[in-house]
Amino acid sequence: MIVIKRQHELDIMREAAKVTAYILDEMVPGIIKPGITTADIDRKVEDEIRKNNMIPGFKDYGGFPASVCASVNDVIIHGIPGPKVLEEGDIISIDTGTIFKGYYSDACRTYPVGKISSEAEKLIRVTRESFFEGIKFAKVGFRLGDISHAIQEHVEKNGFSVVKDFVGHGIGQNMHEDPPIPNYGKAGKGPRLQAGMTLAIEPMVNAGNDECLVLDDEWTTVTTDGKYAAHYENTIIITDGEPEILTLLQE
Ligand code: MG
Image (cartoon, rainbow, N blue to C red; front, side, top):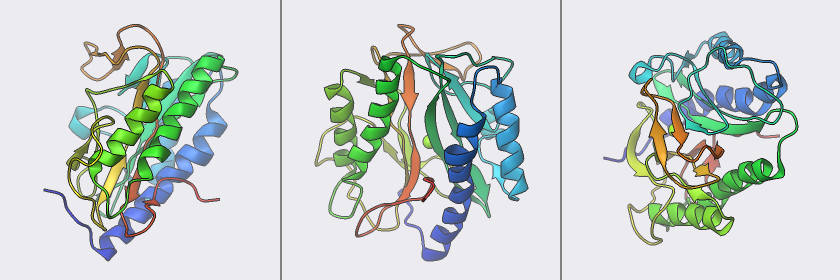
């Protein structure tokens, strides 16, 4: 069942998302550099969330041990922060979120570590662009499949693969609510979009094939060909007009 949020619920979600936006668009870009560990990044993000009197949305979610997923290079999603030291040329996806007054926010960016290859730069750029191609259809009058289709089309047109084993999701009092939001599919299919739906749209894009492998820790999900993967996500509100992107820092 897709939960349509009321105005006071949307206001809480806006607050929850503001902190996530600040972390991903302002704070994290300033701390990612060669030499930092993924555990360092996790600790700084958790401190910032708690400083704002919010709860890290990921910590202990389904048993996940940290406040961010830190996914480096061929790790697609769910990388566990630890002693890994970032090196020049790496790319890292930081996925995080908050809980405020019982409501979740969820967002992700992929960042370059120092100078990266032009192929990696293109992967990050196309992944981000595919989110914005998708949300051109994130408004009343369209269906969920219109978003999915637009994302897939943009990714594949650029020679990359969309991950199919993991998908975006509705979000609210639960991090994962209906509807599931695949990053692939047919235009004109799926649920009709309604004002007050809150969605976490999150293209996960592999530079090579679309296969995923979950490692023995039961979290870390990697590409099977060793090629890089990127991820871009925001929590949005469907309205009658343009979607409201909650987890993007407004200039
Ligand atoms: Mg998500």
